[in-house]
Image (cartoon, rainbow, N blue to C red):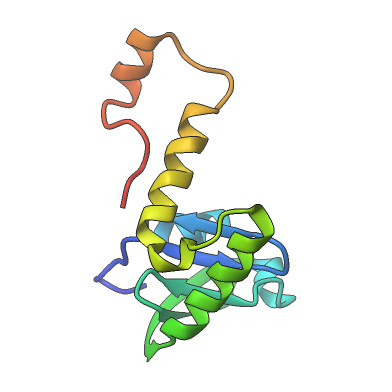
Length: 128
């Protein structure tokens, strides 16, 4: 993995988009068998930088490439936005990720008591 981490890693399969605040989080979440089977059709940063995915010894390895494909990122986000009824998400990928993470945070279950939640998660939801 690179020393320079993107703000958002977008991972696309045939139906969903998954978002992560770093390459390490994305690699930890992904399964090597899914990478080997070609489950993911694209992995891109918020700027459209292409991420190469590969499996090595049953671990997922993500490499930032020098290739930038911003039109592809926008196309995939536009398609996803139409699917979920949120047109225009391709215009602000970081904003979309932040709103999604905040919504996930607010709807998580079970919820801790507020005092404990502040102690365990003083920063609140992940934000790019």
